[in-house]
Length: 293
Image (cartoon, rainbow, N blue to C red; front, side, top):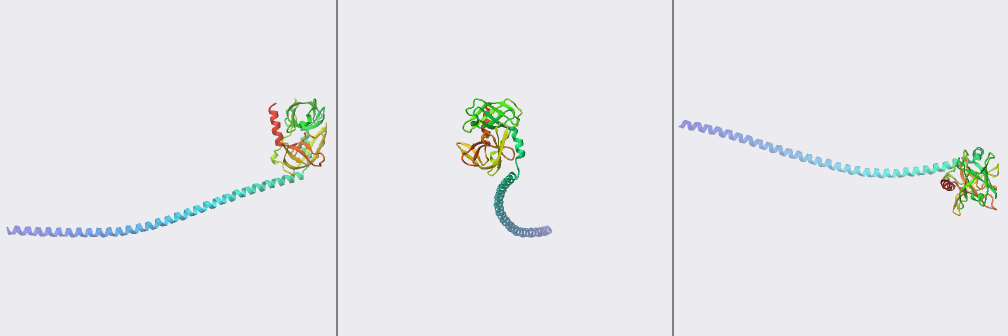
């Protein structure tokens, strides 16, 4: 009996030792874990602070970058405005340069070749009440003159540069503009082309060509004194070109051989003061008249 009690006491003591050792081990592990957690917490706090610092730095850099971008955008807009202004200035300078070149070209070039080219398209108009000039605007026989050249006439004929005589009919008129469109029932005629009135400049050299007495063509030279003159609702270019009797209805020609006007008015008693209906104005009227034929 005593022996069994001893054995039980020994087992109990051993169990107590094991339990105590296990407790001490677990306690040391808990302490170690707590220390590790504290260390991890401190490290995490340090990393959080570092991250906050990085975030703050990034925010500042973003703000700086936004400011830089805003400044760059303003600079780019300013540069675009400057570039647009330069383009505008260059365009104006180019236009002025082209005008100077054109004026220089005109002042240093004669009209001899131009005259040879345009005369086949110019005609003399004879009526029972007077005479005048005109020019073909279509190869199929349509020609232009002043209305006052045929006003009151009961008979009319056209003589070209080759001396051929043709009967004509009146297609249409504009009394207000003093324009008449006639037609010859034949084709194959030389024609003249209207210039763009926007390109006509004061100081530009021009010639007035007409055939007031049959085949006796006359050519006079001068300059355009002014453009966009409005008289009685009509658009004119003012010229100092001498206009001979019978030149009414004839073309005013530039150095390119194009019609810049139709010679219409000469102010009596004033030298070098004449007027020609402007090209675009005449062209629009003529096109409407021919369209209705």
